Length: 511
Image 1 (cartoon, rainbow, N blue to C red):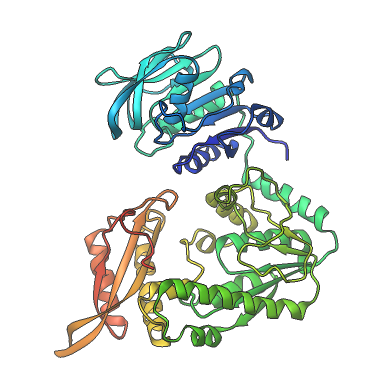
Image 2: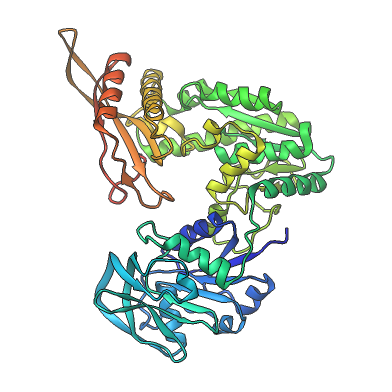
């Protein structure tokens, strides 16, 4: 697919994926490449611009990451953010002023409004500054375009070269002008038109898949999660009944979830779906196991065994569909990207299933884009926009060993929690929310009788990408309603607590 492209050069620290999300939200396609990618390779991608991402490096040390200086001769817009801004200042012989310690604050910043980068943006904006230095000496032919209240320089530009360096993070939520600033870079500096559209992507991908697969047989491990569901339906729309989907119900899904997957994909969309009810098999393997990592390994291994057994019944398949998405590609260190790509392995799936190639139709997409494609394909919103759900399912939301009784308790409590959050209109505000059946039991009172029952913990977080998270400020009256319903409607629960720990120091999941 021919499309306008922005290259994001990655210096680590987790900034690149958030920048990519902001760029794509502005309807411009982007790719993340390692910071040491040569200018020659970048040129082959014919990009409209380059963004140098940030990180807390010290430019004065000899072992800090560098870039190929020839990128500044490509004649395209270049925006350096935080450490990327440091590199620009250093490359053009400016000077940095080291700070005694790293700054991580939201700071009122004065912007020069005749800069193309700040066009139609207020001259006073709050910006998130996260750096080890500010600009001491502006490079020749550059000018200062952003200052803090104490007159520290935190932005420079050479408008003729279309090169900009910032000491703050426009992709951060706390930078009030961030989205508009990035749009100015994309549309006014790089002159993009905004041709990245999920409807077009879905239509073009289906056509390419149909041409590529032809009359061959395709197999997909359908977990019911967003990624595998969207990938399977896209291939189904391309080749119909040539696709066989295997849905392994391990008995660790949320309330009615297995039936919903079967109803939507097997009946509503008429996929060639095989549901394997393996609940007893998984629970037998997990009996008496309390360690979370052991749980994960058992579930992963057993899933592979069940999948292998079902795949052998089908016989030879030519292609295997996998719901790989762009963050998976980035995190595995792969620099390239394509709609269909062959691999020698299939991640968590067995490598002895008889197939020729892997098809990864979502390989270029970020998570939110996968959801938008799901909507385009007609998947119900409540499924396609559902919360992230771990592969081991409820097994890692039960502290301690797993029993059918504990699973039933957790399913019922979780269903109440999700229902009340949706009723309060918070389901699109809270990034992830779920219940945990703790290993703790405590004394309570019910109908004037002493009880000694389980404690359920509620978890709710706000986040952008899951790398960091803050606990969600759910109104007290909503929490009160949830607690009352769980303790009165779910047997063996007499106490509900709310987790107010961020990430870090905690993680989002408890196990």
